Amino acid sequence: MYRTAIESLYAWKAKGVRKPLVIRGARQVGKTWLMKEFGKSAYDHTVYVSFDNNRAMRELFSADLDVTRLVTGLELYAGHKIEPKNTLIIFDEAQEVPLALTSLKYFNENAPGYQIICAGSLLGVALHQGTSFPVGKVEFLDLYPLSFTEFTRAMGKEPFVGLLEKNDFAMAAAFKREYIDLLKNYYYVGGMPEVVANFSVKRDYNEAREIQRSILMAYEQDFSKHAPNEVVPRIRMLWNSVPAQLTKENKKFIYGVIKNGARAKDYEYALMWLTDCGLVHKVHRAAAPSLPLKAYEDLKAFKLFLVDVGLLSCMTRLRQDTLLYGNELFKEFKGALTEQYVLQQLKTLPGIEAYYWTNDTNTNEIDFLLDTGSAVLPLEVKAEVNLQSKSLKAFADKYKPPVSVRLSMADYKREDWLLNLPLYAIGNILSSVV
Image (spheres, rainbow, N blue to C red):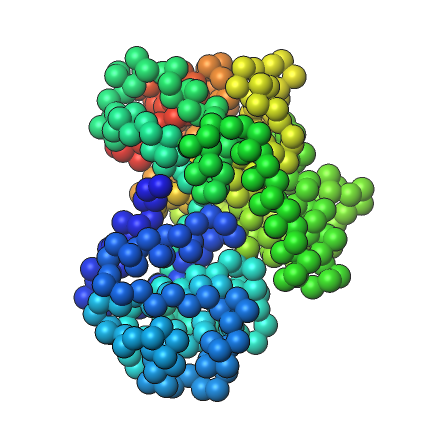
């Protein structure tokens, strides 16, 4: 499968001066595969070190962090000499040996010629007590599940990606049914690499579900393995409440949905844990639609989304026939899936920070506000072709954004104040609003 993130790795390699690179992301989003694929395609040699149950490497990094000694140990482990210019060093599951993370500081300061990529799920990386994280001495790359564009390529539909990359919306509209079918499949399959790889070959919805269940089970096991025992029940309850939260008409996160009488302070650590692990995404309310949106962030009001739309549909036990062929009973939750899908795609777009907005009386809501750095763009999400946009029009009349965007199943159309962008073309949002 092609992952667009590999282009960022090539750009990192091409730098004259580079720091060690840390790839962040939830478990099973493809970090290990991406690093190995990059090493295989861009270097003569790769030294791959997984710190999971690796006693020799644990002992190597526990003595001291002298770079010369560490390189000697890595060469003994690899069985050959490490030439800095043509060898990629990969540290995987680095959270298992926190001093391996700390060593990146000394590689950067004392031996910057070595090319090192480090990864590990955020389980323990962000929260591991006693770890001296090399702030300012590393670069970061965030990796997410496959985007809809990557999924389309994996399904063997490269020409359909090409149409959108050329902004050829007239031709894309002629093949709208193909795009919508791909989109419905993406809602069900999602973007977890193992699920997509299996589905791209077998087209078996039941097998896709089984793999998703195993991923969810692995996450639950991680809760018990990595989180403090007293917090695990709250993490589990919060995690399992997300689908119900998204189904509500007002998708603002309400602690009372987790459990009657639940309070923010009781679940604060559980929420931070899931967020730092990349399993959930918080989208805060912006109190005012002004630049920079970060300055107007309402820390008490937020929506919560899962890492992947396919995992969301699995957690709700959504049947394939309900999703693919439509059902009146499915109408309400289709909106939740669509909003999850949109947020998931926005996370993969560079230079975008997503918020949402409501007025003080909560009578008007904009599903997403995007801070592009130069403008605030309001986004309204429609699951079908219903194009009523009262809240969006009221917002546009009052705040005069350069353009307002409505995402729906309808075709591309640009009006004076409004851009209607098909849901399957969300990757074009930045190029379309220029």
